[in-house]
Length: 388
Image (cartoon, rainbow, N blue to C red; front, side):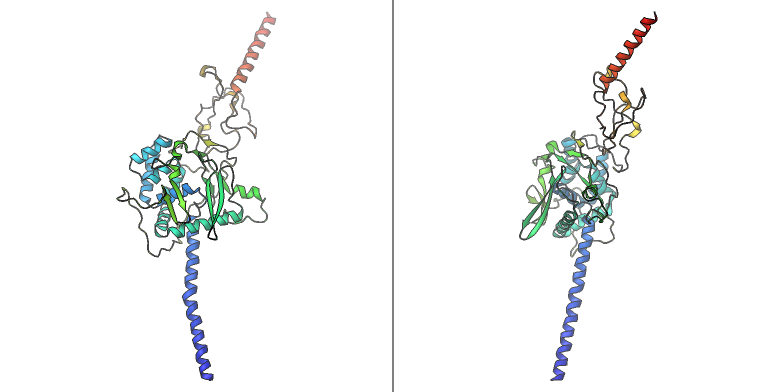
C-alpha cells in the first residue's frame, strides 16, 4: 500500500512538472509577443481609425513607401489633385490617401525596418495587430492621456463583453495627426506632475489637414473609404476587408506563419511634443507642404527671419513690414507652414510682440501706419508754416 502511494505521488509530481514545462513557456512567449507587438504599434495606435488603416496598408509595401516618398517630394499639387496624380503615377489607393499627410509618409520612409516589420505583422497576424492597438488605447485612456477634445472624438463601444476604443476626427473635414512619445503616453504620470495640464502636454497635434473633397469615398483614395474592422480583425476598404492587390506594381511583404514580432526593431518616437499646443491652426487650403521633410519639432517656422506684410490696401499703399510684427508673434509654432511674406526691411522701430499676439496680428496696422504718417506730415507742414 505504501509502495502504491509512492507511485501515485511520483506520477502526480511528474504530471505537474510536465504541465509546467508545457504551459509556462507558452504563456511567457505569448506575453513576450504581446509586449513586442505593443512596442511595434505604439507610435501609431492613437491615430484616427481611417489614418491608422491607411498607414498599416502602406506598411505592407515598404518599397512602394520609399518610391512614394521620393515622388511626393517632387510634387507641387495639393488636395485631391495631388491624390489623383498619385493614382495616375501607379501608386495604390492607400498611398494616394496618405498624400495629404507627408510627415506620416516621411516617418514610414525614414524608418524602413520598423515599417517592414509593421507590414509583416499585419499580413501575418491582423487580429494580433488590432488587439495590440486596443490594448494601447485602453492604457492611454487609463493614464488619462487619450481624451475627446477639439481635434478628436474618443468613444468606447462594448460588444460581447469586450471594449473597443474608437478614434475619429472631431470635425470630419479636418484631420489632426497626434504627436506623442510612445514610451511616455501609455503610462500614468508621476504623482508630482501637475495633473491634467501635464497629461495634455503628452499629446500634441500639428496643423489640421483639411480633407475637403477627399472625404468622399467615391474616389479610390477617399477618406471615408477606410476604416478598422475591430470586430472582424482587419482593415476595411469600401466596406470590404482589404487584401493585397492582384498583380501589384510594387512588391508586398509576405505573411509569416506562426509570426512572432521582432524584439530588436526600434520604433520611431518623438521626445518633444510641444508643437502647436494651442491647436487652433487649420491648413484649410489643403496645402500639405510637400517637400518639407525637416522634423517638425526643429524646423524654423519663420525661415530667413521673414515677416508677413499684412497691411490692408493696395500693394502701393502697404507699408513694408508695418510695425515689424513677425509671423510667429504668439510663440506658437506653425507646423510645416513657413511664412511666405516679404523679407524684413527694418523700415521702422522693432516692436517686441506680446505673448497674446497671433500670426495674423498685423491686420489693421497698415491703416494705423498711414494715419500716423499723415498726422506727422500735417505736423511738419504746420511747423514750417509758423517758421515762415
